[in-house]
Image (cartoon, rainbow, N blue to C red; front, side, top):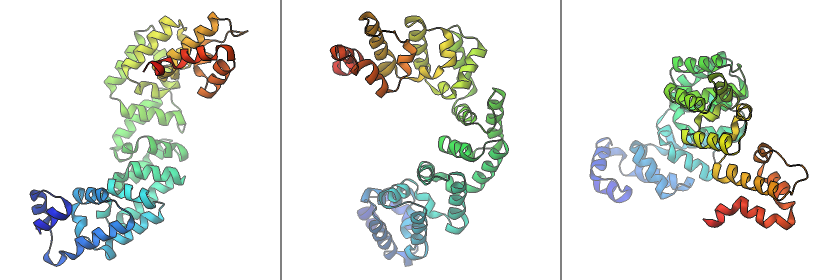
Amino acid sequence: MIDYLNSNFQFSKTQSLYISKRVSRGKFPQNPLSVLTFFKQIGFSQSQILSVIRQRPQILFTDVDKILRSKIEFFQMSGFQGRELCSFISKNPSILTHSLKKTLVPSVEAIRKIVCDQKDFILVLHRCGWILPKYKRFMDNAVFLERCGILGTHLALLLKLHPRLFIAQQSTIQNRVSRAVDLGFRENSRMLVHAIHTLSCLSDKTFERKLKLINSFGFSNDEGLQMFKRTPTLFRTSEMKLKVGMKFLLHTVMLPKSVLIHQPQILMYSMEDRVLPRYKVFQLLKSKNLCKKVPSYIHVLCLSEEMFLDKYISQFRENAEELLVAYKGHYLEA
């Protein structure tokens, strides 16, 4: 038995010994071979099969026709096909050890009730297959969140953004929702979902530290919280990025604070790929008097990539090369 497991599945002697002690003689060697053949027929690669067996060795001795096949067919009927199915199972092999009727069916149905879009449904299961065995707590928390005013597409969005919240203690969920509402977010709003997600990702100390960083650039507490309310994801930006962004926009570009208060999302733009390169183009446009009416830097900064290139690079054919070098020069140097 130990030699068989070593040669066929590359287990260590310790792993092989552990597995062999859990196997009855009647199950060996037919079941391992039938399981291996079954996975290959579905389309599993050798590495995916090894991943499944190493994480859940008991699957190697599961009856294919009585247990495994019905579970695989259930996920196929749920929308998983081909490589997608193999990837999902190999990343979440523990789901094959749970009851189809008592756990897998009700948990998948519970998620489908929340996430109606098929693509999003598959995405959620891919990201959090580990949530399936905990469906009872998941269902209780989903109902609790609905009572807190997070409904329909907003509940689905929260599940996509922060699935772990759905298996947290209800006291934790209540704390996050209450804090977001206290900060001024409306119930059943998309921004409330983003606020809860951000507050769930940060400790209270980290949140306060980032607020103090914003304060250090001359913003009041209320102004900092206004920025959070307009763009909750801002507080998931690193402190270094926030510091560099505010320093450049306030001290170099000389933007008034009111711009950052009303459009805090610009602090999340890439300094290297967007903020600084577009500032160089903006300066060049001004110095060469290329625009009849000089646009504001904030207008230039907030345009989509396509619109920016069309309006401020391609339009000026005689200067297009120089403008493009100013915009993409850092890539050429690299």
